[in-house]
Image (cartoon, rainbow, N blue to C red; front, top):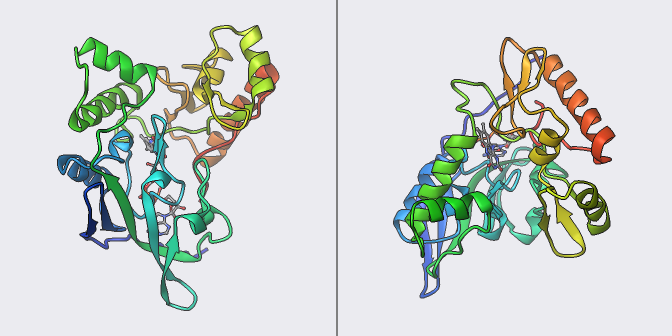
Amino acid sequence: MNVLALKIEIKGFEILNDTDEYVDIKVGAGEIWDEIVGKTVGMNLSGLESLSAIPGTVGASPVQNIGAYGAEVKDTIQEVEVFDIKDGKISIISNKDCKFGYRDSIFKNEAKRKYVIIGVTYRLKKSIPIIPDYPGVKKYFIENNINNPALKQIREAIISIRSEKLPNPKENPNVGSFFKNPIVLNEVAYKIIEEFPNAKFFALKDDLTKIPAGWLIENAGLKGESFGNVSVYDKNALVLINIGNATSKDIIKARNEIIKIVKDKFGITLEQEPEIV
Ligand SMILES: Cc1cc2nc3c(=O)[nH]c(=O)nc-3n(C[C@H](O)[C@H](O)[C@H](O)COP(=O)(O)OP(=O)(O)OC[C@H]3O[C@@H](n4cnc5c(N)ncnc54)[C@H](O)[C@@H]3O)c2cc1C
């Protein structure tokens, strides 16, 4: 089968609006995501700092609504500029019309393969940054005696924590988090917490609770476990590593076994995060 693959190299970093409260910046889709995060943090603009050190490009950031440490890129995206592959027209898609969800957007659904994203406009704030409400982040600041972290220090904290928890894809081939964190009704979460009082969870609005998939996999006894040439990373159960010459079939087999074991133990069905091409 012949397929056309495009490597987007569209560069650009343009300030569209600069007010007392925020700055709107349009960034070319081919820019490296973390370089842009570093640049905006250096400009003392908040909004992207918790998304530090996520590999990839700016153009991919709206596709799965990248997120980490409680932040999602949807909260900063104003609009996305796209090139329609069929009619060759360039248009703008507003934040609302991107239909962002948890690791989701129209670019993964009804608009899948319809557009090439060519630019993304982010609205970043000049106000004091919000410290990510995550135990690991709080621990980092306590250990480093930092009381009121500056934007730069939040970025440094995230980079440091991520480098300990996430294997370098060049050394241990991986695609980052392999499963989405399940979002369940509170009553489902309460049952799990009753049975496993040390369960980790994050209360969301609308009677929903997010349970870290990594916690479920680890507590199903799978951390460090190998399934043929695929292993559950021993420092972070959310990551699968190719430890040999694992094929896509091996990965799917390991994924299915993990999903089954977690379902049998907790009654929750894990969903895969990365896309199979
Ligand atoms: C170690 C590691 C850690 C990670 N941590 C996180 C994390 O914390 N949070 C998170 O959300 N993700 C994380 N990821 C996943 C990954 O970094 C993101 O999905 C990122 O956005 C991928 O960027 P990319 O440029 O490599 O896109 P690709 O992987 O090449 O593409 C991803 C999808 O977007 C589409 N796409 C990409 N660019 C465009 C474009 N310009 N126009 C139209 N469609 C496009 C592709 O067709 C594909 O469907 C991690 C990955 C790794 C390896």
